[in-house]
Structures are given as C-alpha cells and as structure tokens.
Length: 136
Image (cartoon, rainbow, N blue to C red; front, side):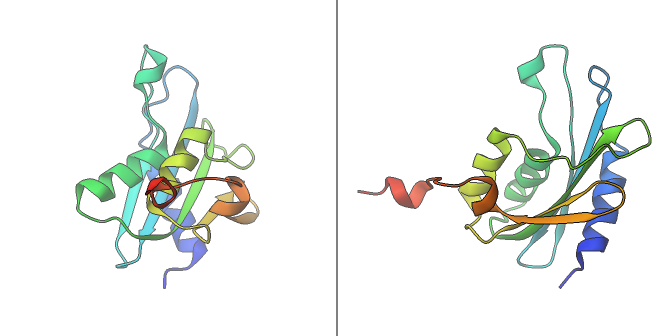
C-alpha cells in the first residue's frame, strides 16, 4: 500500500500543473485506486467561474474515464505561489463526488507543508446519502 507521504508528494507535483490564473490558489490531488493505480488532478480555473473544476474532481473523473471506480484514499495540497497555505479541504461538491464512489471510511489526507491531517469521508461529509440510499 502506498504511504501517505508518497501520495502527498504526487499531489504536490500535480499542483504545479494547476491553472489558477484568477485566484492564484493552486491545488493538487493524488487519488489511490484500490487496484494500486494513482490518478492525479489539479484545479483548472476559467473566466466563467462555474466552468472551472477542482483537483479532486479532476483526479476522480480521470479514474472513472479509465474505467476505475473503487478508491482507497486521496491526498490534497494547496496554496498560493510556491508555498502551501494551510489544509486544502475539499469543497462540498468534491465531497459529494467522493461519496458517489467511496464509502464512509475513504481516507482524505491533507498537508499544510509541515503536518499531515487524516480524515475520513464520514468526518467531512456527515449524514450524507449515496446512490444506494436512493434505491427503492
């Protein structure tokens, strides 16, 4: 199993590719699939704000496009310029996208440049529902 520090390093590399010309806040994500493959993502902004996307969704959508739908954990890093700026928590939309493909124990690893913080999806998205909850 890949170590959290290795995923963080890959997320930092993905962050370097971010297109954040409007906010200046670059985010990188490294998603570990249960099959051992890692998918990278970065945020991509747009002049029409809703047209952009977050690093987490970029990684998840890349995996889904590759036919993969089972994931173990994700590392996320963010900040302005060349420095990390606190923990880059996933936004609400990203949390719900994670819930579409991941169970409550899915691990979310955040890194502020000094310390790791590990959370589960259940901790970041309590009282959520999934497609299984919608079956009648």
